[in-house]
Length: 205
Image (cartoon, rainbow, N blue to C red):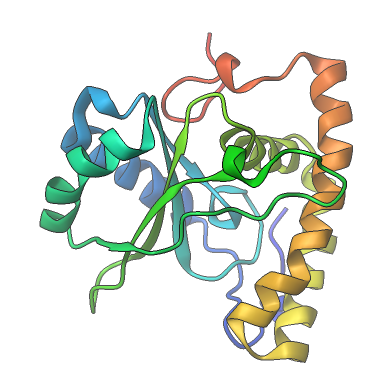
């Protein structure tokens, strides 16, 4: 279902069907550049969900065995692709989660080259809770397209109300926590897990 352009507000854009292919192209580019140290590369976030209004910035996730080793190995090839490492190394820990913060660490690069697609690159440990959350959030919405318009309208209304990306993110995080609570029930009922997906983020088999 395509969300109408009327949900777009300030920094939120109406869904663009081209995002799916553009995301797949970015995944292939990163897989080739990063080599076997990238256990998997996935297009995540709202641009990876058909019909979802979003900031026109692609979120990609690289799953690795060790963050420090990956950061050392990835810096050079990522700089060659126009990425810069940023000092954001801690993900939001969902409300009600008793995990210590160190289980939600990451490494982060972004790309903001003029005339090119803007990209956020999140590097997380394979099997970590933050790696799982990103994939579960995406796949639950893909499996429940009827929920996409309501969430897209919420995002548009929130963006219009707050007008600042950082505030928008802080307010949106608790809503994401609620979605993931429901999504975990779906995962348990269906047997979903990150291991049932291939490197491109599609169900294996």
